[in-house]
Length: 187
Image (tube, rainbow, N blue to C red):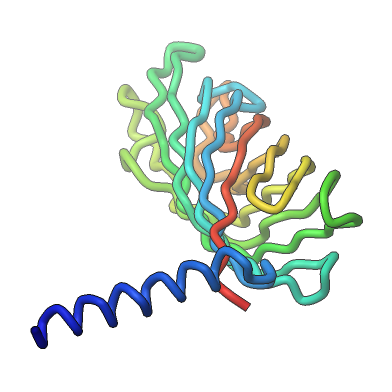
C-alpha cells in the first residue's frame, strides 16, 4: 500500500510538472536541430550535415542570449590531386537572437570557437597538418513560432593560413538550411 501511494504521488508530481512546462512562458529553452549545406568555397570540402544544441534565455520578449554547441560533418573531396579528408566542427559559442515579433521573421548569430576534429592531415596523400580550429561564426535568418525555427545559415571556421596546400586554400565553411525544435524549461 505504501508503494502504491508513492507511485501515485510521484505520478501526480510528474503530471503537474509537465502541465506547468506546457503552459510556461518560453523564457528559457533548449533548442535541438539539424542542418544541411554545401561547402563554400569548395576547394577541399563538398557538403555538410550536422546537429545543433543550444540553451537560450529570452532577456526581453524580442531578444535572446545563450550558448550553443553541436557537430557538423564536412565531407572531403578530391581537388588538384589531393584526396582531402573529412573534417568535423564542434563549436563552443555564444548565441544571440532578435525576434521582431512573437511569430515570424528572426535573425541572429552564434560566435565563438570551432574545434576541428577528425584526421590530423588535410589530405590522405600529403603531410600537411589540419588546423585545430579557429574563430567560429554562424549567422542565420529564418522563421519562428513557439515550437519551431526554420532558417538559412552560413557557418565558417576561420583557420588563417593553417592547412593550406600548394594550389589549395584550406576552408571549413558552408551555406545551408536547418530547423530546430524549442523545448521549454519553465518560467
